[in-house]
Image 1 (cartoon, chains in turn blue, cyan):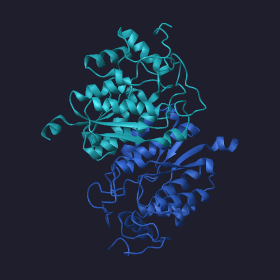
Image 2: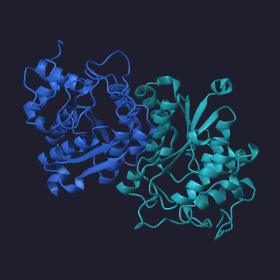
Image 3: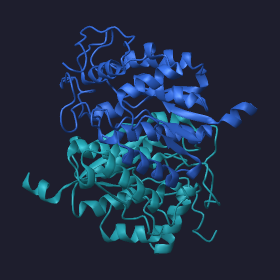
Image 4: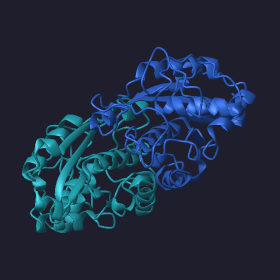
Length: 235
Length: 235
């Protein structure tokens, strides 16, 4: 157990998407991983869960250090196209402002869950694959929010300043994230990003759009198959 | 609906205990209330839920504006005597440090849920009955934590600075809270504070101890009946 102590344990929020996969690969260079996945009534929850388990297998994380939390109350509160069947998932590039796929304050819930688990495990860091620069414009992916939340964590937990929030992708573009993932050997073929479909990625929702543009700008093929492949970001 | 708009809607976290009841009574002076209760696997969840419903009836809040959320994952993570049957609830006065009844980062989860609901409802404030001075020593009841969390809310939500966190009791003693509640006509007889029992309050757990001391110092009788009434704070 000496090695575990030396390297330290990190709780990584792992949705199963591209960004969280690369975040886990970065964390794994320095830490042992505890992987946390959440379902909150999102339409593609089953597919995301399968991606989570496949990634956890890849990273060699045992059952005790992988956890799936039911945040179903978030979906039950409503207010987002990700969880409300009456609201359509938008297609194509994100527009101006906060999109209808925003789940109000979702990342605060995810971070709070990871922090609670980190307190119990004695982990020294919580990792989240939030992306500010090249994202859908959700307010809870901003670096300023993450910094403020870290301050709240350090003031509001038993562990205090021994617990930090790490978001290594927050200022990266999607293309940079793809390239960083490939450089680290992250299993991008196991990830799932599509908001609208669970068999073949739709290729049309804003999440697919951002992902496809990232691979196109990186100049590498996306290992996933798509139902519609719009031909890249210029479209 | 003009009056609702003028007075504004406030989301109040209402556990069913003394502090949250008085907080709701304070909020009700200026706002229409939306009441949020959470279960998280705590041993007295059923009794607390009944107190919540009785208080919501008292405040005249209709079904659409009262919500009970299942944060069962918090209990499932473990780490607290409030939710873990293998850990005993301590008796008497809180000791030094953070007690075993601390549920790691619980108030962050409660506040995040209230903030998500406030975003959906368009409410301008979230109220929590956190008490720093005369409490069990939980880190997530400190004013510094609440201020930092408010900053995270304002940076991480669509509503931004239009959403504030109010914690009117944070610097009050339990006796002051009792007297403020009586002054406002808050229905203290409908509240439940005991951590250990669901029929008659035990009178021995730290929550009963703090409550009984508060009533004793205020010089008024507690309307609840107790199995053991230790004779006040001097004991």
